[in-house]
Length: 336
Image 1 (cartoon, rainbow, N blue to C red):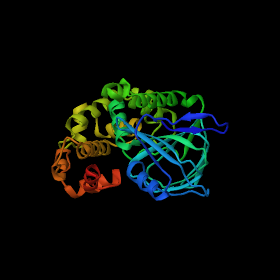
Image 2 (image 1 turned 90 degrees about the vertical axis):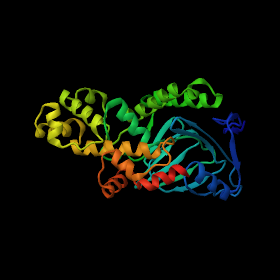
Image 3 (image 1 turned 180 degrees about the horizontal axis):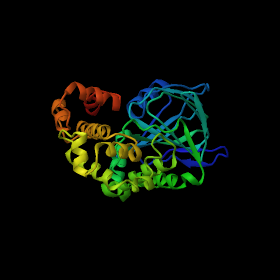
Image 4 (image 1 turned 45 degrees about the horizontal axis):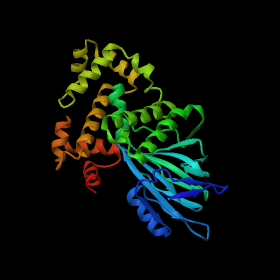
């Protein structure tokens, strides 16, 4: 186990300290390690004594937990990460995080969330220690779809540098700490895939509920529960027949309503159109196939056809617009 000391010299165990650790004092080794295991970063250490870096990590379902201590003041520049959100819980010290034209200082008791689409600049105090959680965009999409039947039309973006402290995050903080403790002691929560998935769903649900985003209003459980029956039936029809051609008139006839009324209903209650809902669902299904370890090798043309895309060029175009990479790049990333 690796111990740190607070300002009073009291010894504190690193979170996840029972798991394998990476320790280094060489800046180049630290950067190489983080690029491979966490996120690409350019790091400098202003203090003349340099870093005493310690990193522990563990997977909890689709989430990856990181316990990181740099052991020195650190200046970090990190590029966008494609489709990986980052939650940061400071445990000691403070960090100044800048993304876009906004900055926030995070301290113990805070939870900060960062979007994958923008670069991140960070300045950390010498005593800074954190739990950081990598959360794949795909996991959020699957959670929203499974619980609410809602398909995201455009990428989810949290309000830049959301930084929340206090009672509004008590539940989220508690479940994260429970998951960290469970990983550290190899208890049943993380080793059982059913209980692990429930825990992951709870983290995502609390995150969506407590943090501002461009979808918060539309993901409200109360609002989703008020969807008219014809909208819910149309959603069910699309999910059952997404791999076949579906026209607006065909969909409207299937649920017994006019095409115009169906359009208005989707816009009002789902903030999208039936055609965009269908396209997004098809893209999500394609991404599931392309990222599934059990489907190797994967033929991109077959994936497109299986998901209702008859034109490969359109499929590649829509896929890149939705996920920031081509289907081939997704396959390459899965294999690396």
